[in-house]
Length: 315
Length: 297
Image (cartoon, rainbow over all chains, first blue to last red):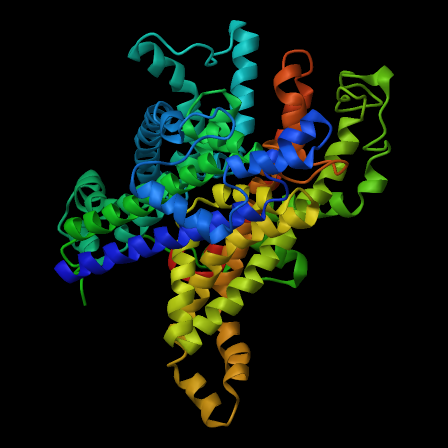
């Protein structure tokens, strides 16, 4: 177990280092840097002035030097300065992270709340009309682009209530904020709940076919007892892994939803930063996302072992 | 014991199928959702191929008189701000979705197959390095990786395809690698080797065909995601550029401003994306049920 943990942790570090190299090189491959964009909007290019700004931003140095400078900074909690606002990246990101975190937790809650029970019902009633309906709903959840769903919600609330639940000023208290986030969280969560529902269904079906379930039925246990006390417990194991994978899935949904609903979270900020070639922000955010995904996977791995005694680490 | 209706059971098992039509009806009864999915996908492909015939209007022709025109007999889906016929744009947009979807799925699939086969076959340092690279790629969500790649490559049709195909590689490579690992020790592979076949030939002629079933299932699922990611990239302004009519970009151009005055600009492109992705997902599910008997009831 101990060696497994250390090995797993070192692999995590390796993944993050690799990610930092890839993202750094990819960003430098982009056609045109921030200075080009600045001069593009100004209309004319003064080479001397351009070189000066590039020097000021450190863009004239070689890529390896820029890379190690960035890594050194990260180790000291210094993520560089945003090219656009000229504020430290840490200060730019700090206030935005809680917004996205709240939205993500709400969306995840929504998806588990709907996904797990509906998946169980779908499996228990396999091949009935109810199962087909639920499967079609969950599949459509995976097929609707989240930005379209978000736009439809905006349109409907415009027509019915004549008002849009959109983020204009920061909400005054937590209740207001959570209310404001309900609709965007539901839009993201709908997609995720579809995924959870499908996996709960197939995991449940797998368990229902096992011998011990047949034994329970043969002993005369009621359907409810078999389905909910014998099967569900074991069917839930793979679902926990999925909730981990969800983390990565959710981030994709958040990027779109925050953009449509104009929520000033980190996911929306990432898109803006990419469009503006704001390297320090993009690379910090990508590393943050990678860190979250890798950590969540690590935790899920460990939980899985704790929940299922048959799984042993280290061999 | 309840009585078994022999005739009905035989019919269910497909014992008295007579001719192609019967076989088709039998398939439709057993896999209704699959048929629905296949129909959608076929219609979508036909729409893309015959776009010029189906759409009477020019998708890029602007007409100031028709700006934001509501759906009517001549423009059945209305017109956008620049007076371009929405129906023509949606029909032609299917080409972009189809081309980007299929090309990136295929490209990602081919790279994934080669990497996965070599990893599972050569093992050693090649496998180790490839597995770590795949770990790195999987640390980012599909959309984020595609977003960064699309931005760093610059906007064009080819670059969008490339930006979507690379993030699709890891899953294909993982699936092919694990089946290769299982297959390489099988007696028939051993026999091929003993008969004097080269390793490369063994890999492509004997191992690869046996990984096809999971690959087809995965490929269909990835086609759906590729179409969705293309729409999302274009929606965010990093996908297929003008003048190609992309469904995702139609939504970002029209969405916010005209949602109130011209809801058809929001409804139709989104509906097109959803229906097509829904069709490919249904098809993928059906293929999984048919090709993977363990999931069957």
